Image (cartoon, rainbow, N blue to C red; front, side, top):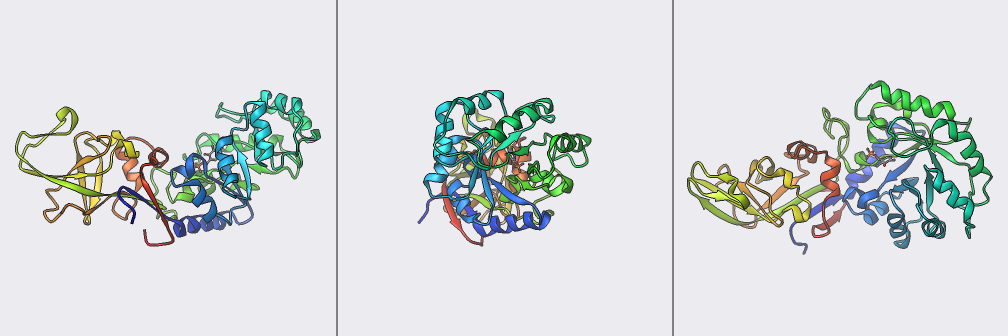
Amino acid sequence: MSSYPIASIDLAALQHNLHQIKKLAPSSNVISVIKANAYGHGALEIARALHESDAFAVARLAEGIQLRQAGIKQKIVLLEGVISKDELLAAADYDLSLVFHHQSQIKLLQETKLAKPLRFCWLMLETGMHRLGFSANDVTSILGLLDTSEDIADAIGLMSHFANADLVDDPRNQQQLEAVLAVAHTNQKISMANSAAIISFPQSHQHWLRPGLMLYGISPFDNKTATDLGLKPVMQLKSALTAIQQLHVGDQVGYGGDWIASKETTAGIVSIGYGDGYSRHLSDVGQVSINGKLVPVLGRVSMDMISIDLNSCPDAAVGDEVVLWGNEQLSVEQVAKQANTIPYELVCQISGRVTKDFHYGQN
Ligand SMILES: *Cc1c(COP(=O)(O)O)cnc(C)c1O
């Protein structure tokens, strides 16, 4: 028996979303992005269920080592590369692939003799985000160094990252793609497209896709739902009613007494809070789904619980299930709007205190 709160993870929906990606870009390979514990969904189980993925990507060394130690055999790319000699040696030991984005990493490689060469490595090109990457002027010389290094086993690919892929038809996307194509050699493998670009910018597909968000069945666009895009939500976050309170006019709810009853109100207490990753920004503005109804969050989100308005659910009883997001009534995209953030942040914040329940189908 698993106890609430539960993040119910539908691995069949995950596999469906990977197939959607392959349909959208049938001639590209897929690097499934499973950084940040697979966007809060559980990196190991997600990696195992994505066995049809051609490679994986994580942000950092520790994330890659965790996957290797759990027996994941596919290529694993560290999107941030390494920052020290020790990290470089460990990456080589664990057969992790690197993104080189800064001169200091080239220097580390030149100064370090690796036990076995690195494979499936990438050079990050700066094309507009001004975060990570070499400028176009440096690419030829850096590629020369990498391609002749004994510590690099195969040809280096060219990678860049869109800053505005969620803005469909924004001219900056085309400019970023052209900047990459302008420096790529013939036959050099290229990787540009994140979820939004996979869906809305087919020209950007090239050889290797890097989907994250859409794998989890979440829409990267403000004006399109996951269903519009043929995606199935993977996570449903749910908990249970632990108490019911009868409030009278003037009664205050929660820390600070921000919410004050203006009429007789039945309030339900739900076992979920910011200690589980339920955003405190949902205080007073969030909604939850209970017994087929959407009802508001009353007052501040606490560490372990929230209060909800049960006036529209007179039959609600202690023990009833409450869905925080991920059913037909309430998507994580909607909840992100209520919290004035993006769905990426909400799912990434799910804490270790939430029980994960993995299954195939029936979320
Ligand atoms: C996180 C990340 C991705 C995945 O982006 P989504 O918008 O989640 O599809 C792709 N590439 C890089 C470099 C990333 O950091």
